[in-house]
Length: 415
Image (cartoon, rainbow, N blue to C red; front, top):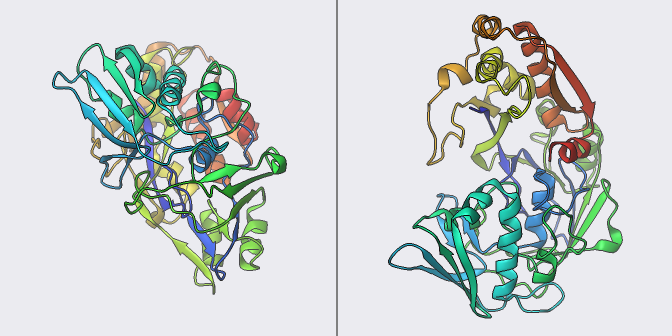
């Protein structure tokens, strides 16, 4: 069971991603370049190898997906013009839309998509399940390919339209054939922006230029579906580890956008001329409390339950965002307000019960095996949560090792 809090926040303006954040933008005249401060610096650029949110944002900038998901949670065609499902539910036939080109000018072909799906399916959990059901994937022609299943399932559409980290991004065949355990060396996609390798400074600066050959869909944009119309020539993402520095830079028109802003700085920015603070999607950002159940002590179910009882969601959320208008407790593993919402486990997940946690630890004869919690010190939107959780676990009787590190180190270690 996962611990999940619902954090109300806003979707980024110029990226169609699964991330949500408090959105702050200065409002200049028509801008040719957007300078943005993101949640962390980009270091790992392979969106299939790593599950970091910033890497996935990078993925949405330069790559595209066969399918998208709209704001009503309906699957829509994206790179695909259409798809057909055979009467027996086992064969999915995809037809690519016209005008698709890689950033190097080569046309997007069916063989590229098949290679990309295979690589994604080796790393992503949903992709692994899907590939376990795949009997064959075959090219029909340059614009048409088939995915043939061993048994009927809708997992193909759900997998290829997946929102979140390790999205099924399409890459040229020569790149997608890189072993999934190795990072790719070329960053060429077919998406609305091109990655400017010459200006990349890992963790400090990443630059994207408009892909002038990109042909957006005709539909209105809707979450990860619809037309991705680019109105600027260039996007520069720069690192500003100090939140106050970033806020002042926004007020002084030195930058145009901040993806995530600590809630305690919002009063400083709300109501200021030329600054827009907005909550664009009440589904919000979900923060998880997960266990490595492959190793002690969390390979014991009762100890996992004790850890669940030890932590009260409200305490974590208050530390993250003191104003209740920015958060809401939630027990649903797949998110409150979504088609998959469920109240199962609410009595364990939401209120917390330290006495019950102590009782379970006593029953299991917990031997004091340390619980290692990774603590990213440079990501303000995440850094408070491990501290609160560590304190709660200690009060319940756990031995806790709180290990501090920067976000990119954490992401690399976690992956």
